[in-house]
Image 1 (cartoon, helix red, strand yellow):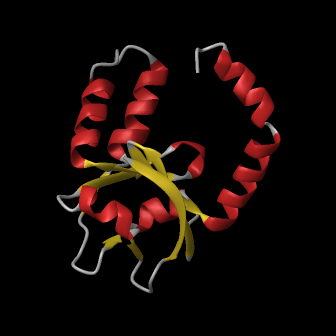
Image 2 (cartoon, one colour):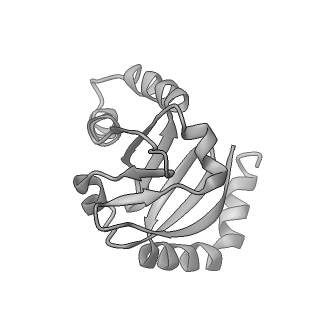
Image 3 (cartoon, helix red, strand yellow):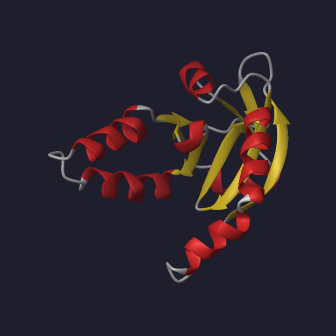
Length: 143
């Protein structure tokens, strides 16, 4: 389970140090892909395989499912964690998420989100301001 919020910086080669708490779960490899809200999603291999199988079962006859499949699957890349706990973020994914140097690593149970620090601050402020409305809407879903 991934939880918590951490600040890290990319090194000159585009590598990101993974928080120590997350390394054991990612040790056997991981998949990073384009996420929603212009961040990156990072999954364990097992979680990624489960998600990819669900996406692959979506009907290709629907434009939205084709678009979502392309975003998530074509944008994905296998990544390995090196002996120093770093992973290389591919350039095309850094560009997608506008990640330059400072990165927020946010644990969200079965995935990790990687955000440009400035974008994360803006997103978080907006979400926090709307938290009452969000909670009310989720209450209707049984959360």
